[in-house]
Image (cartoon, rainbow, N blue to C red; front, top):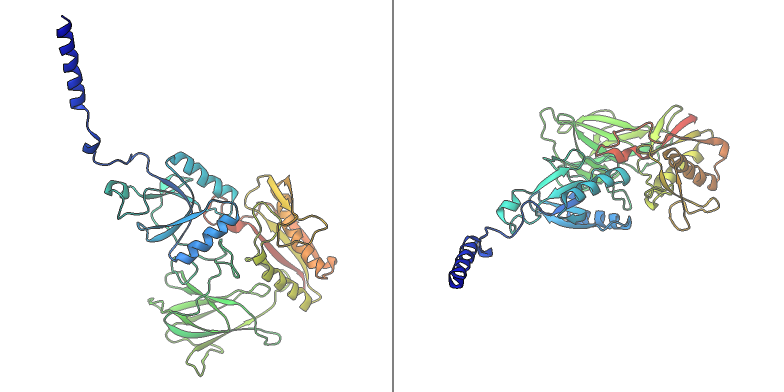
Length: 405
């Protein structure tokens, strides 16, 4: 009887092992339900731009890395890699609401299409964390002349000039010389000119003023190009030309064959409001980053040129949430450094107020009479974009209103 039971058990185990698939028989080792998920803060066509952006994110205490995504042919800068999709979605949404990386998203899949199993590569997808819907097109953050980039205002990775303020000094196309000067005395003004393809309403590039540059042919139906020169402290100046037959007041061809297009700039007038596009603040701070110095000093120069100017400095935030505020000590003069800063807690209105006041305090230190300045704090009451928009970071800004000239 015991012998019969033994044979029965052997038979059962034989059947059990016979129906179990071996590891070798599985089509692949990767769990397709748990692909790697990356929280991405930017994508770039050019390697060095990805490096700079990654370095900037690391300076903000993020564990930023970058890798070439061959599925998009772009370098992706990411701050988190995890198999937990929900965790990636949550982190991307947190970055959108609490950091300058307001267009963060989640990439699920593999960066290396050639080496990844085919089934995984086909599942590679970019996801909007707010809606959890697929992102069809990823816009690279490279400076112009990448045609698909929307670069105003800054984005994101400031260098000597902010990366969003990209300059195209070379390339192929027609030679131009954008002559930028002040109307009152014809002195040269340093600035840039943006070229916009009118037919396609797309930005062609941003070009340095007072220097020879190459502008590519828009190859559009009407050949129409809008040239826009916007320098802080001056009214915006713009001109329409036909690319292949540029003509108009003051337009001529110089001895080198470049088309000279003049831009006569007029100082701001009473009632004008100018955005300080290139003034940036540290996260949760009312302290400016070093690359803001040039534009703040441009404001100082404007006030010194005209002693009749009186201004109002408007501070804005993205949204109205209260939180941590990092401030300059009252008796300190580190306007562009976190050294010696103090940490507190306050409302969004308080933060916007302090950001307006630090510019006022800088001007006071440089000798501007306090009676010529006042401040206004708006918090998030006057946004340019929805606070969940991919461009919501542009809501964080300082504006200068001319009260008297």
